[in-house]
Image 1: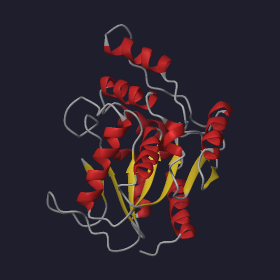
Image 2 (image 1 turned 180 degrees about the vertical axis):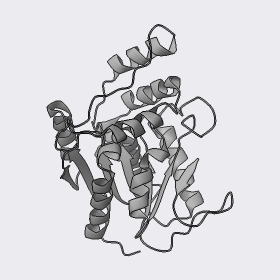
Image 3 (image 1 turned 30 degrees about the vertical axis):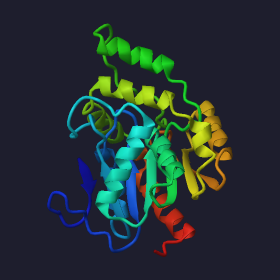
Length: 258
């Protein structure tokens, strides 16, 4: 399932992208492209924003994740080809950030720049979270909405939207996403990323996560960090306007000449 703005197109026909940059948004583990809806709205006046549901997520078919960051990157590359874009800006949340770095490192797609946020790391240890989800998928525990990572002032509306997107993907798919992220060779990948990167960090992000983000930034050759006010890690729901503005500014600063 592909999400975009502007004139609707026939199946198999890419959306119009004659102005600005094609901005491909990559969702987090267990997420979906509709989580970027407010960001897409804000970007559509000057760029061509696109998001999509990975296989097994939300409105895409099946229950199975692709199972590895490498296969997810290959799938995203095929989508880029179908979009007929000369180059893309990659925007990634959590797992989507790792996927963005993997796509850039592979070098099969011309990546203008990367904007990343959420749970960022260069060496994920998700064993505890995976064990908890496995208990849920085997019927030994009840599924609970993860309310961590938000700022103290988060609105009810923001959490409600996050919950509504969260329930669209089966937890079995999320488990496979997290396994893929745990097996991702982040250090090796990041050392091969040369395009400009911007990491967005909410000012209420937990200290341990902020430290992981700083470590990831050090691993990149061309990276900067920008704070997002009155937010934690859940920037798509807490601060979509600030995220969109940061993306626009970064594209402008890096340069938008085709």
